[in-house]
Length: 130
Length: 405
Ligand SMILES: Cc1ncc(COP(=O)(O)O)c(C=O)c1O
Image (cartoon, rainbow over all chains, first blue to last red):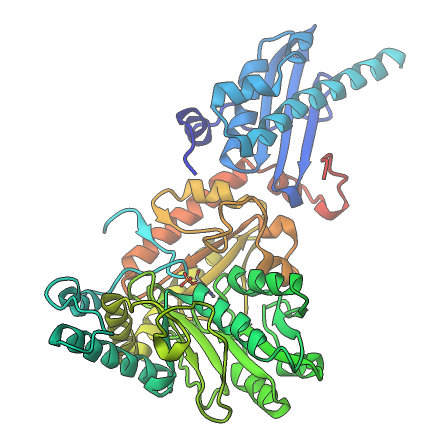
């Protein structure tokens, strides 16, 4: 299978690889996918005020899955939390020219963003109650 | 060293220069039809085909009258299984095979199931091996045939064919063996090994693509099958169609070379395989070699690199031509049916790569390959949330994954 140049670039030079402190109050963590399906993405955001100031990812999956999550971190960094929620998988598909068999990678990346934000929101509302 | 390095010898092999040389005249001046009886062009072609038949028969311990030329193993498999079932339909419609066959066998069986046959799929052990006891237990009154792979194309496991054949003969059941990966790589003697029908293919043994043959036993028992290709009655009526003379000559030459070099080739491939596995296992944790360590094809190494996904690894070893499982299934995203049948979990099956070494592979190739594999796995593990979790002491089997199945 031939990969698009952008997928190859993200695969060779993934942006924002790593982990943030998942116990920190400002950090939201999303882990989506399952090993037996061949893809697991972990995406983390660090929020100050209502802005995502940092994002990190780690992905177990094919090149397109790695590229989708790498791109997702790049896109959400610097965005407001609510803006990040608007990113859709079709934008990822277009940017990376993913073929139909790889669309699930983009869906997973969108899910990872939403899941990380949900985790952050959960944490901050728990914090408010305390 | 030329890049990329070819390490996919179970998918196909390069044509040996000695084979190509033998074939060349039959493309040019010696172009006759082996069935032409009225002139020297035909006689020359027939002579060349006869010589090839002898070369093939000699490699597998058959007589040349027992060799039926085909377009390859897929055709040989279809002819053997469908042809036997059609011939012996009166006896019954039960076939025994295994879960680790090549798709050509599995899909032929599925086709016959739709036509009313009953198929038993034997489950291998965790190394891919099926035993004679399993076969003995599965045989019924109405069993027509046992159809089984000799050496597995994905993990290289070599089945105990001689013992299984003995059971089949004792119980009066035809024994078809898919010898595609075994012939030319390990000793094969259809007489002593109790094989009734066996396919082989040129392109797996340094011969040309699109040519192979089916061995059909003529004595004890005399095996009869119904042709699946009707026409001019070539190949003793079992496979009509003008013989691919250059291809057949190439197949014959490939068998002659294989017979002469069998031990040397095997020793070479085993040494390279061991060199590769030693290097990789020394540098990488959570890495296992699949298949059977004792009964294994010389040049096949199927390795699971936990917590790294196979497709991303193939992308990372961009100077190596390798595959994740069989060539025909690597286009799909399904994990290999062979690893599944061996009880390898889907997550590990997604992390498995097959490395194939052969006659033209060098130590230098292997060293380069091992290095590239090691660095790609290390890099991808840096990226792997699973590896991180395992290092943190998380038991992955207890994690609730968020995924729609
Ligand atoms: C075990 C086995 N059986 C059958 C085949 C099919 O052979 P052919 O390509 O000659 O049709 C192959 C090769 O893909 C194989 O490895």
